[in-house]
Structures are given as structure tokens and as C-alpha cells.
Image (tube, rainbow, N blue to C red; front, side, top):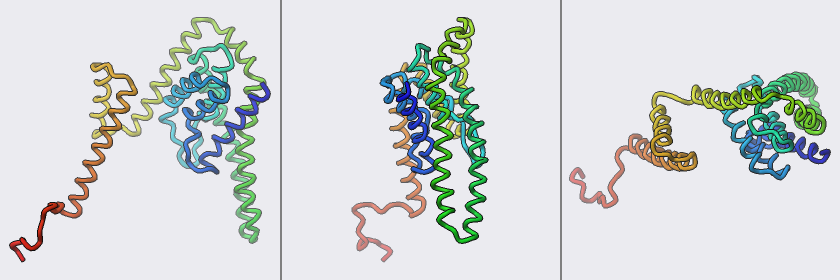
Length: 265
């Protein structure tokens, strides 16, 4: 349990540093995070299943500026680990996702407050010409604080809290478990609704209904719909750019055009 807790804590550190130090590689997305947890714990199937559900829930959450949304990254790690390391179903594990995400949000607010203080220290160091200290505040201490804010909660949740959470889950009556399972399905639909509210426009509505009717009336699965959508996107993208090029530069000359045969010359 100790080794597993340390490994999962390090996965959390790696994922949180993705967009802050390592560049934007999307390792902090719940689907990728849960996949890494599944690989570490030897149950890739459960990790992917939890990650897919968590990804759908978090699709509409956008981190803009200084806003701190619920931390779905931390929730994904702990939730997938709980689903793999206990006998709980995926639906039951997902029921604890949002409380953990809100806790991660609170921890994130504290972390940004501390980082704001370090920013002022770095500003004063720059005014004094001490660029090495400013660099240290930004790269070294900022990285350490982010790492601790993730490693400590995840380590404690896995090392201490797994057995306690499993015992609490076993005490939950069947009717409440059924309600939690239903609530997780609503959370998934809510995540999709948030995403659609951001990206769905009048021009894109037709594609939404096209996919819906292909699933309902043709019986195609998600993989087939995704492949069809990629092919359609490539076709429309090609047509759009060819049309734009023709509009900007005028009609493209024919391949057999000979300027010596131009009557206007």
C-alpha cells in the first residue's frame, strides 16, 4: 500500500506539472490520468472506464484566468484508485468524485494564495536586480508547492483513506447506492450539456443531430461515429480551405493554360 500510494502521488505531481512546467501535453485530463493509474495498479480496463466517465463529467469545466474550478484531476486519480483497489463499482466510485474535486478546488485556492505571495517576493527581487532569486521563486519554489499540494492529499487519501472509504461504502444501503448510481449518470449528462452550451452554435447543430440519428436509427456504436466524424471533418476542412484560397487569389488557372494563346495579349 505504501509503494502504491507513493506511485499514485508521483503520478498526480506529474499530471499537475503538465501545463505548468512541462508544457501542454494533456496528461492532466481525467482520461489520461485514470489510464496512468490503471497502468500503475494493474487494472487498465477499470482505469479507462473511470477515466472516460470523469472526462465526460469535466468536459464543460474551463479554467479561465485566476478562476479555480473543481479539481477533476485529483478527483480522477483518487476515484480510479478507489475503484481499482476496492470492490466498489465504478458508479459508486464516481459518487465520491465531486466531493474530492471540490476539496481539490479548496486546496487549489490555498496554493494560488501562497504562489501569489511568492510572486510579490519575485517582483521585489527583480527590482533589486536579484534575478537568480526571482528565478528560484518561479521555477523552484513554485514547482515544489504545486508538487506538495498534489502529492500529500493523494498519498494520504490512498494510504490512509482507502480502507475507511471502503468500510463507509459497505454501510451504504442499497436504495442509496442506486440513487448514487443514477446521480453519476446525470453528472455525465451535465458535463456534456456544459460542453454543448459552449461550443454548439446554429451552424454546428446539424452535425449534432446527424450523429444522434446515426446512433438511434442506424445502430452505429461510438467508435464508428467517431471515425465517420473525423472523415467528415477532413472533407469539410479541405473544401473550406480550397474555397478560401480560390476567393482570396481568384480562380485557379487550368493545368493546360498557355499564356501564348491568350487573346488579350
